[in-house]
Length: 339
Image (spheres, rainbow, N blue to C red):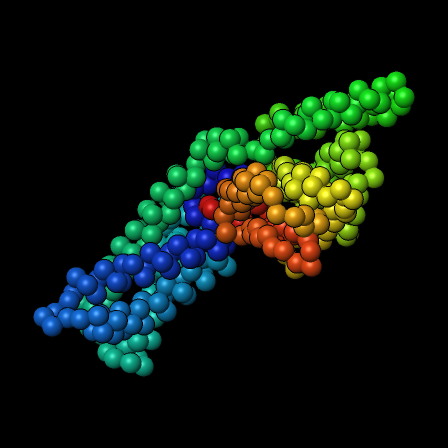
């Protein structure tokens, strides 16, 4: 889940957004602290724009350079990595200052030193903030939260499944045995220490076992359509991402309909992402939405712990169906976690 290296991951979108937001807040505070008599909001906005125009070019260049060089910096020891980040920031800031002197306005030696000292302080503050952020998402905390957030099967599923198996023991013993094997495997996964990523094929197999069990109870009311494209075997996803969504589709979409319906599971890659889409018929409005929202909240939280802002979950209604979409990056996890 998280790397042992404490150097921030500058290929993560969340890191870039947090650094930019931190600088906007710092620049805003600087302009307020430097306010003169007669200061007003218009003057503050003008000062903020002027200051941002001076600091954003070296900041953006530094963030871009760190993004490109992160595979090299990330392999360095922690102190060496921090030194490399500081050296890169000072170099790019010095180049921007030289360009400012050549094309805009001359700078004195004292101003050069002041700019570089401010840059060093800025880098130290940002790295300290990112280190605090990473400590907040330390492995111990993240793993404990992941354990608490793991989706749990609803109690009614166990009782309904056992009753369905009991009804088959005499008439269809082979089918009852297969169902019990599926239940054993399903509960083995649910009780496991689900903190690491698992192969996508394993998650698909788990969903198929779950649907086989529900098929005993719902019979012809439950149909499932799989649309799975050619996907590399190396793709890994967080455990128990698909199964709770499929369970929601059964519980909220199929059970309330007397005639049943079809659950469509579409899995394919697009660009550098994996798209998981689960669609079920939209039943009449009923008071089961609470459990649905809880499962979605748990999955969204686990995606955030694994991928920060690189993964997305959205749900919507379209053409009489309820659809949940999850987008997960297919890049190595070391390139998308917080740091």
